[in-house]
Image (cartoon, rainbow, N blue to C red; front, side):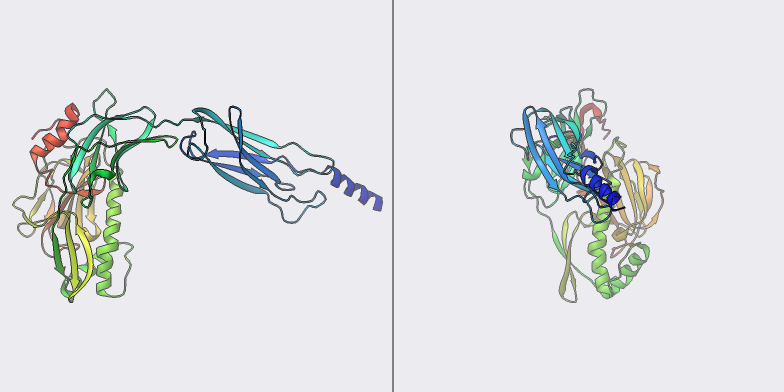
Length: 446
């Protein structure tokens, strides 16, 4: 019996090696460019992992990217702690590897099984060959007279190289995607974009084009930047006003967070809910129809008197103290109580219900990220998904949401970013700054 045990123990010590490890190599991009993250997974089900190695190969070059060692279980043990799986993530590209060359490269992963004093099994080796592309897509600006004004709108026409998978206008954190110019057979693209009202200069405005491995080209294109100052105003908040608007908004808003008292609830609505509503506008823009649904200038409210303008900086005071500050990104227009509100232009209704600070609201998609918003309505006369014509009644003015009296809050949005609608009410501006750049792709009927 003792001899049998000794023989078995000796056999285990001498011959029981681990199973060949399994290896999976997963890059986060289809090739190597500026910086590609590659995750290598290792698993072994018997004695556990030992030495793990990840290398980069290109031509005669072999470079160790990462190496890890684990202690396997002893050959005579069938229980106890062991590392059965591990992951190694490396980053390869022109930003991490000096001397990288265009062409192809190989990621090689090796994992050694646990051995014995007599047996040293070879490693499991897995290789992944990836293309290496280091040149960003070229960009060519085609439109002229690219003038921008803070709070305004603009369009630019351009070309990009065939490797581009993402392109458009970047302004700070704002992204305005490009689209093929309709009906154009030469590969021209265009991007409709909004200039933030508080942008100090044109330095942050860039055309960008990126390929599928992260190479990014950029070009400046703004010919002139016209600084603009906006108005400031002070609004006194009363208990009577808050008692009217706050409970109604909270009752109609899913996910509202009761702050414990009337003023704090108002400030939450004016700040946090305003931010959430802005995010919804961004989300709606992502599904904007890729076509021009309009071909005429935009209508303003009939007989509407301007009560507040675009980008008015509002300071809110309560009982003599400043309690908040927000920017009014639209026009407040008023005429008579429950006035008919007309669609500013042809489009498709994408929102027609109670909408946070805007109360009863309608949002119309005009295509390619351009939308119009009608807020504080007393009633909504259209349904989501409905096509409406220019001048069609979509609702009636009111004082729902954060409205101090019966009026219309109107704004235009480009990819969710509010812009000054004055430009879009101007036939000459549309003809010269929009339609002229797009040429036959957009037939304007002023």
